[in-house]
Image 1 (spheres, rainbow, N blue to C red):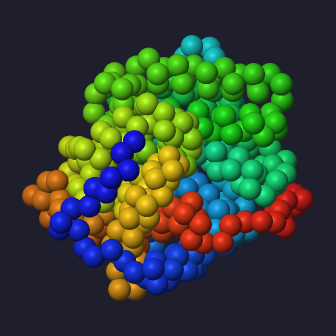
Image 2 (spheres, rainbow, N blue to C red):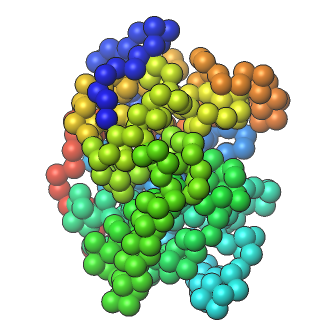
Length: 392
């Protein structure tokens, strides 16, 4: 993995240390202030298409960041919210697993959705809903929280078991990717997210023996599939059998550690992403992106920074963190994407007409900024067990 800077001459001046410190504090406040009484993290409190909803994917990364910067109560409130949603759908999950075992899988429309209202209900609007990655991420975030705080996972045990059954029965199915696109494909970042979650939970030792064995076998099969059909020219691919990269693949290197940082595949993946979908320190989702003109996503830059930090390239990671801080508005809000250098500028106006200006703030962006800052030891690390670990 190259450690050389990839900064473009047209990049803004890096943020000052004080600006970075201020953004760390304001990001924590932003997330805490917007977290609902139910524990949900709003994806974006003001963006028309996201308002009123929390995603398992965004929320799990937000919870992991809050756990990493010493706010376990925030993460655990989100875990509780997820667990209530899962347990309320026990019959649906059992039916999905049984149909899969019988060789007659449930239709996509009957699978669990990717987002829920703060009141733990499914949305009434049409959405690209069948996505598996967020449920794997929830398991992974729980495992990371346990590792930091030695938290007893028993109170989430029933929901954990249900989601393990759901994922073990369903991981082979194509579904929408992180970006709610390309439902006809099996996405490597989705597979990796599931493997990360199942691995994290088996390591926690909270599953009954038979389910634990099934989960471990699923991880082995998932990683085998990624290795045999999710790698091209030495790097991970956007989907099984493909050739292109997607920036979501960076999460498999860090923070989820499905692919070992510094390994040949990790190095090749980072190199391919930096060569083909990174401009300066801004990372695009993928080369053909047209959503809001295909802008650079600060949260994806933070994933790139985490991959570098995990490989020991801390100066490069800090450079990326500083760049991310320059994308914040005057009020300290971090957007979903910036339009400094769009891939397809002709597509920007139609999206604005449809949904308004791009999401700003996006809590997931703040979370990834915090997670990278924590990795670089720029924010206090958790040192004590969760005070809620014995709550039931």
